[in-house]
Amino acid sequence: MQKTDLAALCDNGALEHLDVDIWGKALLKDPTPKNLALTGEALFLRGQWLDALRLALEVVNANRNNVPLVMVAAGMIAKHTPRHDIVAALMRNVLRYDPDNLQARLALADAIVAQGDVTGGCALYREIMASHPEEGNSLCEHISMSLLETGYAFEGLQILSAWLSHMPGTAALLNNMACALERTGHSELAIAWYEKALEIAPDDPTIRFGYALAHLKAGNFHEGGKYYVKRTPLTNGINWWFMSLPPLRHGDDVAGKKVIVYQEQGLGDTIQFIRFVPYLLEKGAEITIATLPPLLRLLTLSFPDVTVRKLTDFHREEGYSYAVPIPDLTFVAGVKSESDIPARIPYLRADEHDVRRFSAMLPARRPRIGLVWAGERRMQAEFVAADKRRSTTLAEMGAALTPVDATLISLQFGAPRQELTAWQGQPLFDPMGEIRDMADTLALMESLDLIISVDTSPVHLAGAIGRPVWLVSRWDACWRWGDSGDTSPWYPSIRIFRAQERGFAPVLKEVGAALQQWVRDWKAD
Image 1 (cartoon, rainbow, N blue to C red):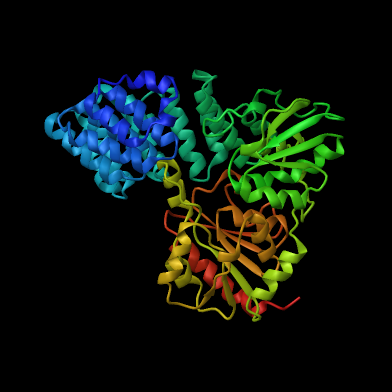
Image 2: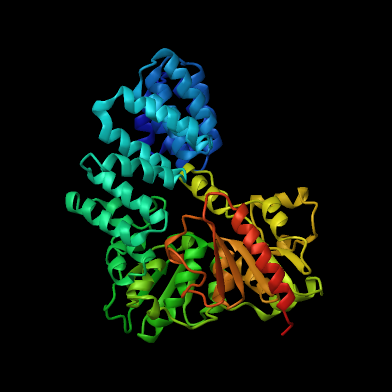
């Protein structure tokens, strides 16, 4: 087999037709950083992260002293996987050959922090700062953002405050300071720092998006919306054909026009903002909702006057005038403040047959309390870090909430559901094996008296039908829950319990005490 031009193969789309073994052999014959990056990134983007990881490690193992190659492998692994232990091992190997490699030292410190050793990581950061004073600004930018991305916003804020107290701020440093303030519950202060950053870099998309989120979290929907709708839609790099249509904006005349309303973000985001579809219908629009399979049946049941299509099977059609990501509907509808949020609840509906089916399946003893302790587990590093901040474990939640004089129902989906097998506390009834999609989950919730959940999609489902729901929010709460308070204008039936630190143990103890009182006060309908 002759030397393979991997770049040409990628350009020709050959990766989709070649198996991993062929690509591995080609890489081992020509193990350049460029070829590793082309192959690895392509496989990661196809969702074959285990194959990509295996290939990267095989190539590196055969070329351990090739520092540029190892650096590319570590960068991909850090970006696309949660295997910070592997990144740390690779960087220690690089530093044996090149002990003064600044990027390797930084990557090692990042990996140490990401594994939870913030003390060890920060000690290495201090050593790096001391040995490279001429790189102070760029190092502070990197270190503070690394701490923010791994959930150490307070530590990042301390570093930024100390640095900016005696050094001029770059746009990146000012942006990081604003981000740290927003994540620690000071959105109004964050806005001022974002404005300073925008004075230096007015067109920077990262700064503009952070500025939008800070305004939204502070309740300034009008100002935040102006920047939010100008973001690049978060579609994992997929350019759906309808994204070339004119974007729908507030004030556009939609009477008699065909409009595509498409899922852009997670299930919870879609459930939260789909409430604005009636606004467009009242304006005379003909709506097609493009969504993913878990929501297909639910949205069809809930909005009988619109067409609901599977996003991935929605091929090019003519006659549409506008397209709009579902989260943008808030601003299309002219919401300027919390008082403008529609009070029309419930706005989702379940199939009555399914409601009766799940009601008959559940234990008769009440009150029935649904529990969700973790969000969806994803593999990409940035999402893994966010999930760690919002999720707890069944063991931790169960220890805080039980025993309780109630029937406990598991609403947990995905990989964390496996924790039930090790649970030996108060029994949890688990009907999730019968759940096909979010329409089933909604139907199940209709027979529950209370839902307690971390910040994931069941919170939105419960809120959308007005079921009592307690949100156990991470300390760096999502913008939609604001900086403070135990209520939300989005869902009148919600009660928010806010963690005040990275761990959930203290706030779960608070939830447990409140639950005991709730059960004592509960009365059947």
